[in-house]
Image (cartoon, rainbow, N blue to C red; front, side):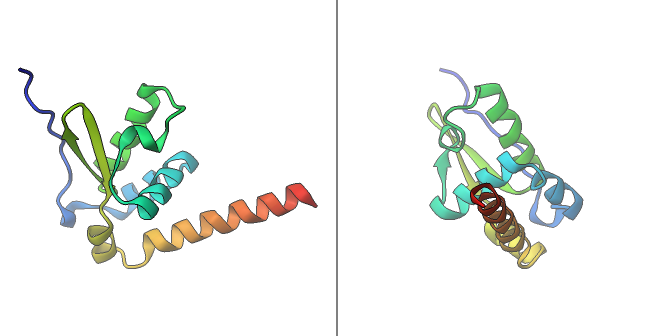
Length: 115
């Protein structure tokens, strides 16, 4: 039987603002974080069902390495959840503010398309 996959995660006090901001600077990763805030822990495949596995792995790895998400193996699944408590403790309101700005930008873009 194969050994269970393990993932390295930075300790909460090692989560650095520049890395978190970089992780949140890409629209696909922002969408993933929004899904995690709404749904909690999900199979990573649910974050990008139409994406190639290599693309999904790249983005979830970047989110994990930056301290934004926690990843664990569950059988053949790769379960992922937002490290909401750690991020809120380190950078109060950051994720909520970034997501709100991202949603406002999307709404403004959509309004411009219909005008």
